[in-house]
Amino acid sequence: MPVQHVDYTEVLKQLETKRQGRDLSWRQVATEMDIPAGTFSRLRNGEGCSNDALVTMLSWLGADRSIKPFLVAAPE
Image (cartoon, rainbow, N blue to C red; front, side):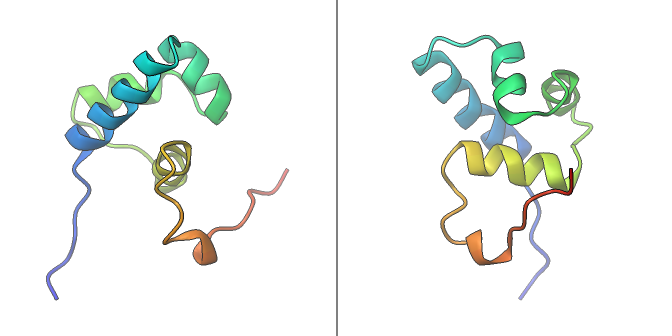
């Protein structure tokens, strides 16, 4: 199996759809996710993000069902 890569363009597209559907600003989305708002700018600029931020975004999108057994809460 070849190494898989994240399609950040698709992640941003899905985030944008949900964000608009809920009438939220990017800052509000970041607050809900408890990640820095600048994360979205870095993604738009092709810089990627941390694995933890990516998993948080996928969870916010509801895509965590298949990976849930592998997730743990971040330490306080």
